[in-house]
Image (cartoon, rainbow, N blue to C red; front, side, top):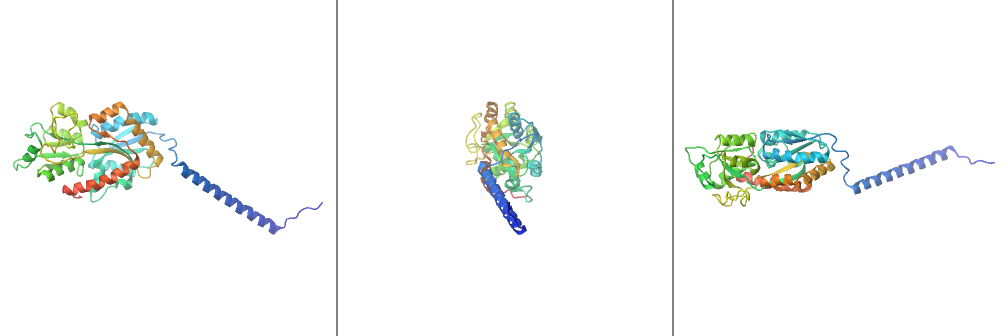
Length: 346
């Protein structure tokens, strides 16, 4: 019987052809897998979290942010199956906490619960410690606070904003107001009152709202601006007095307290603040969405809803994309307010 003989050149030619076919098949398979991954959307968060999550708070324990963050952390931890450890990093108007987040690994194990005041830093600091939309990943806008209560020491002879403005103009005395730092939303409000009314309120910065309240009750300062959540106990005990509310309408819980516009500075309406959660930039989108989803579930719990409502907060808990768009608008509008109030970067 005769056998087919394969010459050496023919063998190598066939080998090259088989190799080219294999490469082409591999490329086709890789392309198909890429397309399938794109159609499937973001990769799942895997087993996240597999260890405790740290939540930074840029104020001491007992403030508004701390109170709400701790209330949210409990149901979130139960749902995630891991503890959420609250890490209070107060000082420098939130810069310390913000820089800690910016340096953290983008793995979802360090989050920041903060307020508008932290974002204001990039508008009032010549040397920007961070840029919100570059260095952070917005997770969710948790809530908005429509207004602050304007608080005075009980011995101050001012029953409304008109009388407060006149007292501050008296050259024989200084009327001081406190905030949590230069560029803080409370600082901005005080300067807007000065700019819109001709008042002469003098600013004194502190390292947190608890210290502001201690100073007000001790008559070291005469004026402060506080969210209802953290000041109602002091008001009821007579340690401080509320003379106005900065929102566009009276607060339903204290209907006898007039708005700032009603009580002496027509047209001045000031949304006090907002709270939001951030992760480090480059945190996987699947993890960001997981955290946002847990917040959205937590804020629907009756006790969380009651806490928000009692403090005058409007619950949001929107998507990361909605929060990013909100921040773009907020930065633009707040920059204009700062210029109007004569606050320049320092």
